[in-house]
Amino acid sequence: MAESLIKQGKAYVDDTPKQQMKDERAAGTESKCRNNIIEENLSLWREMVNGTEIGMRCYVRGKLDMQDPNKTLRDPVYYRCNTDPHHRVGSKYKVYPTYDFACPFVDALEGVTHALQSSEYHDRNKQYHRILQDMGLRRVEIYEFSRLNMVYTLLSKRKLLWFVQNKKVDDWTDPRFPTIQGILRRGLKIEALIQFILEQGASKNLNLMEWDKLWTINKKIIDPVCARHTAVLKDQRVLLTLTNGPEEPFVRILPRHKKYEGAGNKATTFTSRIWLEYADASVLITGQEVTLMDWGNTIIKEIKTENGVITQLVGELHLEGSVKLTKLKLTWLPDIEDLVSLSLVGFDYLITKKKLEKDDDFVKFINPCTRRETSALGDPNMRNLKQGEIIQLERKGYYRCDVPFIRPSKPIVLFAIPDGRQQPPAN
Image 1 (cartoon, rainbow, N blue to C red):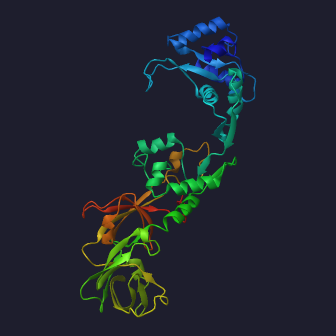
Image 2 (image 1 turned 45 degrees about the vertical axis):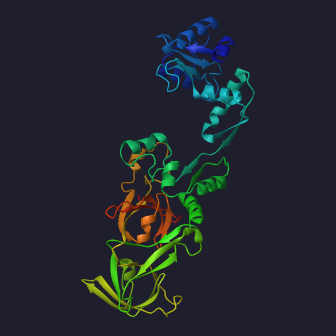
Image 3 (image 1 turned 45 degrees about the horizontal axis):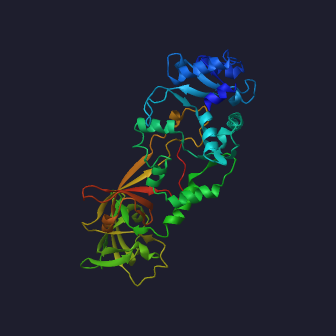
């Protein structure tokens, strides 16, 4: 095709230095090579095909319109030399077509009727159709849509590579990355992503989308089916002793999800000594009746403190009490050796600015703290979690198991899944 266009006088070979060519295109100045005779162009073209010293200095350019206000029509480059070995064909070829030249040719050749592209390439549409016209190939229609931009998010692969190379993230699958593998590792379901994209439609308006909408859709998909488990923070827990609790621990088999049988069952141990979250203990008052989830009511009889810090609670089971009348419904764990160690990992946006402008240096807006790990204890059933499994920790949120149980000394790693109510980072 390149030779055909050269022979028709619709393309020529130019040996103008790269920067000079760029300046001439910007000014609308014709190249000194623009009016070379066809034989001279073909001679230089053969030098390019052979990758000679002369050919390496040359480019094939379309002979379009150097005065056109749309600068993409100002004699764009069609072919350039490249002697680097190709990953498939080695050093067989010395010249390669540019993206602008190859796309219309391949689209027409392969039977594409509508080329779908984001609106950032709008100025190149006329160039695309002009090249097809000069080639004598059928017209391919272009259908444009706006690029999907997300708040506090970099989508440029060049900028994301900087985070990988500078060890700001683990790799391209890091849960903080807007890559497919990254957001799936954070707990997004493919169905949620598809639904989100379909809801946006093929709009041509430039939109800056919130992540919250995507995570809200995700929550509606995972909540009806994900199993429920219990955890308390390791360094922020208080022991509650039940004076009339069971003399010997006993086990009950309970559903992992009260409304979804497919989640299976779990074994829950009931003891007279149980762990509560310190945050829950701090709001209790003596004489208050509260509900222990999946067990029943208890009355707080005593709150022991040292220097204003709660050290222990004493309570009395009141299982005949109504769970509907209590204000506080508390999660708890039995005080047994079988509790598993957990590492609860939360993530934040990589940058602190909602929308980076064209001239912004993204490095100046890097969020210094984007990963937070908290040690916790979980119910023994979590030993059976599989990598990738999504659960809900009661009253804490949704989590995806990134590293399952291996041995008691190594914690299970759970990644927090946003639920659509996440707050933006502080600047």
